Length: 433
Image (cartoon, rainbow, N blue to C red; front, side, top):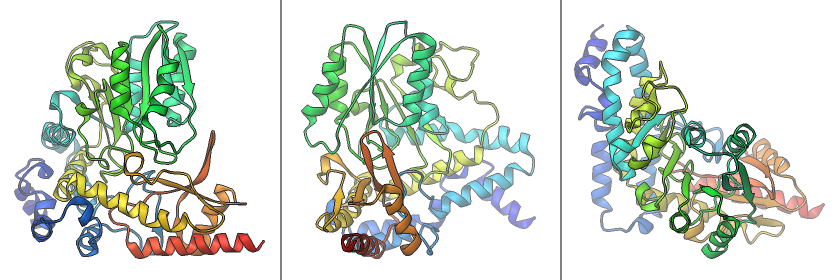
């Protein structure tokens, strides 16, 4: 009972992740402040190679030491403070759900909206909080006013849930969904832009653009694509599932009209958290995916009428942002890119091994595809785990066939050394055969 009273007293009966008594402030703020002061003279690229700095960051995570998780492109683990926030506030909610959820924890959504907006570089009035990229982008896909014959351009390499959403809209509303095809990696912006532009007709209304292609980590020139689309009066939807919380950018800088992302990837927020951004003057034109009493209002909150939801998860998002901002977006981007290049550059010279991702900064960051000649992605994925306990994922999608490797800030150099050794041994064994 005393512990409970102490907890409630500390949080002031308000949302702790958004106060000076957050878990981050109590557990990590002092140590990271000292770290940042110690290395403040280093650029983000230089700091990326300072293992002493990142070893402290690694300690904030509780990943299982018996496996090496290199599939952070699917979903990332959260730091302990994020897990703790979800657990503690879930316990609080269950002491009296309708009271603590609706009268106490629900007060945290507006501070969370402000934190997300600060990270995204936009107005809080443009940010809606939901569960993942699929929900965010489906809200826009199904909420747009499109007529039979209107055309939407996407790619064969987009995320499956988005492809299926457009195909369903095509079947229901008789719009025309066009998918262009790319052979990644590509290291020329103009090659990507020209292919989109050549597909445009007088009936094109929307470009669906994936910021970072989830299969192989290709970064598309989103800002240039949005600028090009604007010349034709075309709306742009950006799938930022694998860019937000990883790349150092502000959403309005992209020039898009709509942006959806998952927060449980590189931001390391709780599993099942996401965000929708809609340019302020476009909000009124999008119908909510879940009904609202004022569906054509200009209030971004109309996209949050989900009924009962997890308020503890919202507290966890707040702690994830605290942790992310203490490191810094640019430092985080450079560290994860360094980790990707660290292993990829080493295995690229191994006989029978192929890298499926550009290693140039402008075209990739965290995700990289790899294959071994004579092995299917499933076989390589299985070999990495069964013998070396390295968890990855095999990718077979359209013209892409590889194993996807994705490190995160908690990934250790010795784990990547083990990955390099594993791929080298697997390739050598395959060469003998």
